[in-house]
Image 1 (cartoon, rainbow, N blue to C red):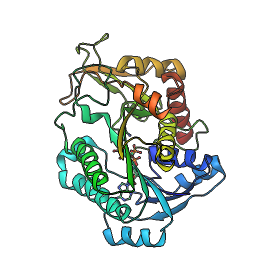
Image 2: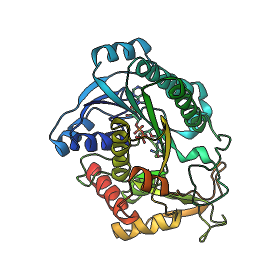
Image 3: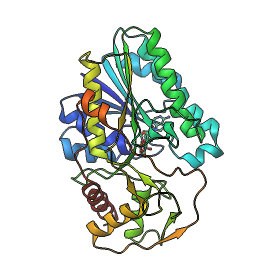
Image 4: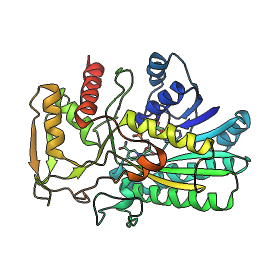
Length: 338
Ligand SMILES: NC(=O)c1ccc[n+]([C@@H]2O[C@H](COP(=O)([O-])OP(=O)(O)OC[C@H]3O[C@@H](n4cnc5c(N)ncnc54)[C@H](O)[C@@H]3O)[C@@H](O)[C@H]2O)c1
């Protein structure tokens, strides 16, 4: 079965391509390399022994997307990772985010709507919950007004998919709401490759540990949490990648109970910034240079997932601990710096 993975050279996409190939799927990747490089393909080959098809293509170019689906009419499912993802940049350049995250989604759904049968998996985010009123966060928690154009593209994306599935027989979709993805493949052949200053905590920590950054700023230690720092749910990227394969199979095997479903993908455990730093210090044996600074506007206090639905309905559960995921991130950082 041929599966299109958009953004398949990116962080989460590349790990998902590996899991798909390990499960016997034929993969075709679309990526414009705006936030990745073609070398990632070599990493995928090193792990799986198989080179996925790859088309360097910008999904914003509608005619090229149409042409792609003409040439690959045997695609039965799409996992859509391609998007711009820097929250701060989205505030500065909202139209870039609406065009890249919403425009491309519409083009893909248009193509899939013309098929008799198609499965679609969407990269959503726990940002849709904002600061939820109750922990852990269930899928029924209300979606809060988005704090940024990026967050808005995830909320709108979910609505666009739900509306389209409602009126398109044969189109089935699952939105996976990721919590905080981290880590790298245990082989160290693929991992997270942030361009410029990392937006996420873990690559900032490993780059600081590797000497690339002088110091990590911890934004606030006066939050109402156990140690005063913000709490998040860190999910190992390989666990997350496996959730995509399971969700896709659910659709391909017609096991879904609705033609649009939503699942949280997290560990169900919250970790504070200081606990994540301690995990790094434990697995690396290094002391991390960090300092506490003022709170950063827009940061929520606590977010961790209720994973009951994913556990019971999807039959998926995270397997790796924070320390194991951190070790993979540190091994990867050391490999790319060597
Ligand atoms: N990493 C996170 O913390 C996180 C959390 C929640 C949700 N998400 C979502 O998961 C998805 C994947 O995230 P990631 O961390 O792997 O990001 P990433 O930037 O590593 O991967 C995205 C890939 O899409 C490609 N791309 C972007 N625009 C494109 C376009 N117009 N045409 C073709 N390719 C394009 C990029 O080159 C990149 O390889 C995104 O939709 C992101 O919003 C990520």
